[in-house]
Length: 316
Image (cartoon, rainbow, N blue to C red):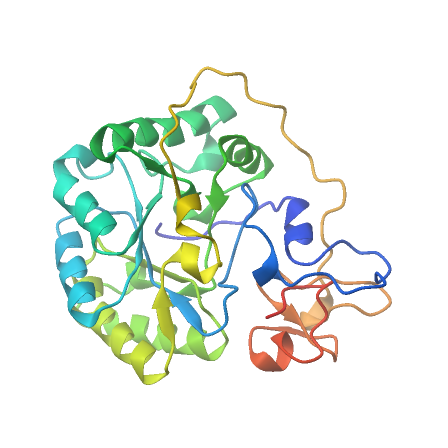
């Protein structure tokens, strides 16, 4: 995943983040951390307090083994969103895939060819997912139920296919922008981005195990910072409170089954101006942010803990 594009969000996002714009119920809505992780609904941040998910995109590549070595020495897990044929056929990286699974990490999908899914029709989107499923099924006997769209590009048609296939759609709220800071001179910028996003409450990381500086320089610095701040590094599934048995499937797929019609959102969220939320207009916070008791959106405990309004955003 190299650069983000504009996302067309499904109305289901508002439900995941705490309801729709309606009068307050008699009893509070459950927080995001108590909800089942729903397929086809974009997820931006961890819901288990105090956790951080180190999540790589675009591998496996020649530096993936080194990343696994560094994580093993540090005793930390990560999540690897893998492609099937971006660099070479994934079957050539069987050792790295096995290590991901046996060394306590989470294996997840980043599609077969790293295609921009919004440029494809529904049948082509399904093929991007199912081709990788079939290959991983032949390699390790199972395939992931978590995915991250290449370029962070999705629309309602893409999300509809993901719901049909049962995929949990992962984005991020902690982008290191390492893809644009991957030289000996610029990789410290990615460290600065990591720190700034942590300070803003970020918890779900986006970086890439295909860049040498990311693996050899950025990753060790991130590990140091995580430990210094007393955060618990976990997999994406763990940071969402999702039991491990939900991360994979071994059921063969019928790749020719008719796809359902695209679900058009009937009540898309309306975001408030200048970071505002709730109020007479019942504004929602952007995905992954919390609505404080003072009707402003943010990521930190000031927004997400005492007084947080679950109808208008996430709460911890």
